Image 1: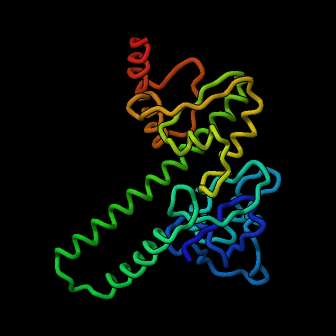
Image 2: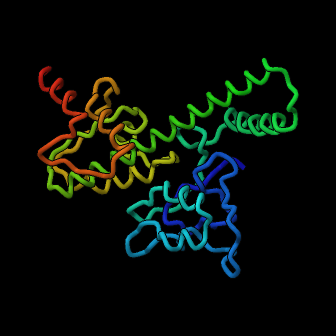
Image 3: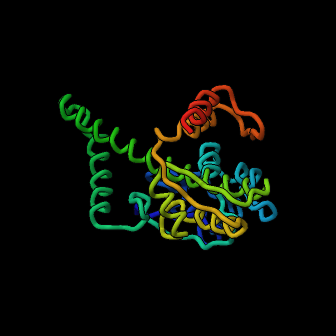
Length: 252
């Protein structure tokens, strides 16, 4: 019920029958089933030439909100298998504690929807739990985003002909996975696998964990990425980030 497929080549994930969309519950496709495609798999939605989501196929099969959800899933560059994992733990493995919590959440949400006259104190306790869960979900999303950033950074470094590099990140989970080349059941394991493909092209590549307040340049660029299109600076920097770079240079 709570498990979900992590996208690999998409060949074993059925579009309408399996849980694969990046939403908590239920992660099933609700778009109308197309006749003769009842058992179609997710690889139908991927362009085999580019290895990316096929925009035309997505829009032809899924409703708009589900098209956007699907596009949030990174498609692996290597031909990896689809994997069933538990999305509510950091390591992707199911355990009884989190399974129990998952079922209690479903039960609580059901009770809340059918009992509108509960006292204010109880409602506040319910909403505080919901807010806490939102923060946990956001934290998981940020970890996956950092894994995506690390993958793109290593790929870009290779494209630019960089031979030696240090990849820094503020997520211990991601840095540990990068160092160990861990392909576990985590939601971002396929990204770690992609990084390992590029890492072999460097003569020297290392990974370093650094606290967020210790790398204000990266934090500034991350905030900039929320509002600007993808931009690459080679011999210049955005003016919003310049003060942090100057501060780092002054501290050397």
